[in-house]
Image (cartoon, rainbow, N blue to C red; front, side, top):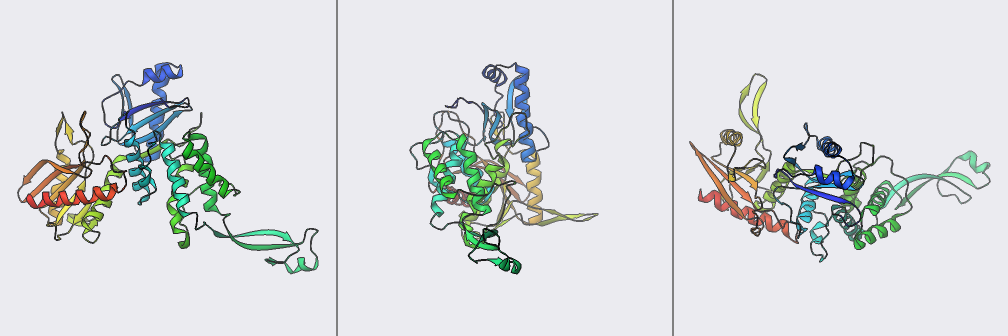
Length: 434
């Protein structure tokens, strides 16, 4: 339960069904049919946001399940549904999984490390995503505040002191307040700061953590006043302000409802959501480049498998890792769902067929299928980035190695580099030994 009058209910992606209709009905004083409708409506908003063709939340007799996404959905003004990625799970006594989730979400969405790498150093671990977003925004702002975010803007003003470009007629016939003139300003009042300020103001009512709230209020005082932001959208900041780009991007997401907004009776943004498969693919690509070296890792390289009537038939493995001092050439493909059936890890047949197609087209005999490791009940996480083989397939000259990598703990200081180095080292050794 949230500490300020909100009820939060939790699911694990692809986990066992959980009876939520009854508790939601009791908490909201509605019947189970209305609670079921609320859950399905939240899933529909999630599907629209993530571009899914089907509702990722299912409500059946056995309970509620969530598939293919993770994050926080605001079901109503006082109801929240939290979905943890299957590879992080939920631990009510340790909120580290939320920091890991936020870290991976921002890394995937923005392609860079935000200030969340330092958040894990705090002894007071936030238990809600809005606080994580707020702390990240505040840290990024103060990291860059010595280089203010300024931009050029034109404005019209009236003054007896000539500074801009007054109309020649106005020089002979000034108004009662002076000459009307157009002035070019280079200052902090611009669309970029206006967007950051608007995001901070949007977050302030959502955040209860005193440190995070204080950071947002300081940002608001520093940046005000600004013009209203009517339609927030992604923009490329000028080169001189490149350090501010991550904060601006995150602010746009906040204003678009990236995890925070819900309006009763309106089709509002669904919540702080991510497509978990995409997050895993992005993490694996970034980590492979850091671990093996960017020069030897080629993402989505095209290989011709054959031809069709309309032209070439090409395939695109996630990564080609060229031969280097560590190991021979191999293909690395990110896989996410369906590798555990009846408690036994295994590779699904469609993934085997796809791996064979990649191998044949790329003329590469080794294919590594990489899955995130799943939490094991009552067991401590393995070392971050550790890799283990759970299935090996030999088909003619092709070797398919199915591995799983430990992700939990990646939000700690230096976590991404540790994950990348151990992942690359382990995979290289596995490839060479097989």
